[in-house]
Length: 489
Image 1 (cartoon, rainbow, N blue to C red):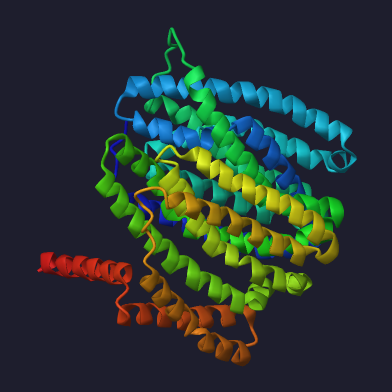
Image 2 (cartoon, rainbow, N blue to C red):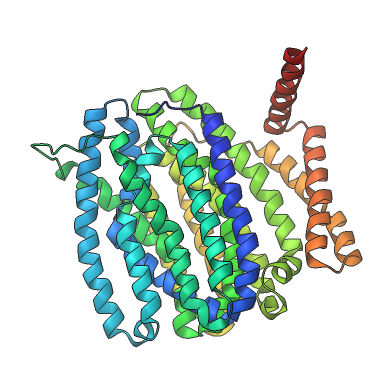
């Protein structure tokens, strides 16, 4: 197995990966939105949201459970290999069953059959997803490989998009390119797997030991997919492709920011699971507190910035035809903070502590509220109702997890004085954004200048108010620069 890198190194690599997840949509989404228009964009988003339900069933709870269980045995190649075999076999069986169900659904449901080409493309992506074993690479903390692979396929998909997507009828091609970006890397993953595990067949496999935790994580996945895709799916059935296309703009921006905010959590899950397995509780708690500070410092100012600059963001990313999504985007930005904190409480604390049952309860509560409220508010208020329901659902799940956290030794992870400082640092520079908005008409220039003033002022205020993580990070950074120049001498 490759050498396990430090958390700092893994975070840098994952930050590069996250930055690519932020930058590539900035390149592709403005182009796609203008070429495919709201209707074409909505068709692709609707097909993807439906496919995600089948991918969820095929994967069971393996994507999260696989990281935890493989991280705990990663020092023993034989035990790791046997575990990977067992999970992969279970995954393959479920994928076969799900493929049949997906095919039946495409043929029998008129709404799906109308876009059968897109649905079949996503079906292929679902099958290839099984062979990706991304959970293994995350458990082994192979973030250099994950980052390089992901960026390479993203870059290739961007080139293909500019070459082959040029008119509204090319939405099927665009759907195929988005699936290829993921499917290609999954094939590469499977080819490379022999570097980390033995491919020999074992005499006895213990499938039963995985069933209960996998089903718990699967139940989580069901509720999570309901929470993340239900609004799009219900908009598609109750309103139509145009509403889905409009709402996709707000969702796209939120998803990019959530990926950035939760980037550290992706790195920490295998390390935190390893600490729990080896009873290193002090290291566990220290890492959790740093992660919480990181999420708050990133999520709060990002949410505030994009609430204020929502109109400019939509004009830049999608054009004037999508301005109806402005209020929905402003409201749904609240989710960036909530999801970031839920990632801490659910994925980084409760999951490594084997408290996934309580995580499930919180997600089920969130899903129930999502279903009920969407049924009421989408017919009445369309995309604005969907945004309202999403925030309500996410908040309810977070509140349940906070209640559970109170029963663990890590109930004091939130420093409320620091939270007030971060809120103050985030709100004060709003006046600068309003001045920029009123002075600059060009959306891109307004966003660029506004972000420089806003985040520069935010960082300065954090230093003046002595927020620990910012001070320590800057101190470490300047110390490394000083050491570098001292070595040069």
